[in-house]
Amino acid sequence: GPARRRVRRGPRRNMATAFKPSEVSEFRRLFNAVDTDGSGKLDPSEVMKVMTDIGEKVTEAEVRKIIADVDSNSDNEIDFQEFLAVLAQSKDGANSRTLGNGGGSARRFSGAMKKA
Image (cartoon, rainbow, N blue to C red):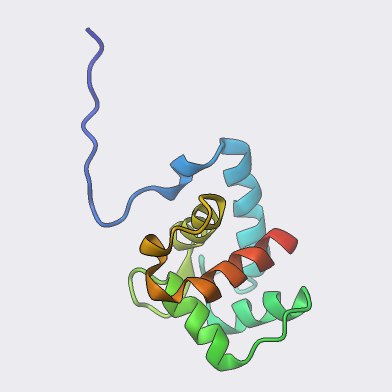
């Protein structure tokens, strides 16, 4: 029979599987556009800029909260997998369990990304 692939269940699953490849490449373009310093991660100033660019009024504290809600490895930045996770959660109808109790700000960020 066909070889069965073993799925390693680590804390970090590949969020790209939640989307079609065309969506992932679109999100990658968007991520790269927001990642103005090319670090491969979105820092608070980059998140702040994209939010204000689309007309969201956010404070630094709100930006820190958005990042904290999304940031699964606690580096105070959003990497591409974390970015995809937010978009996947909003696509799923924002399952509050996966977002923890701070789903509102993460949803706000994903809404901003869809407008950007």
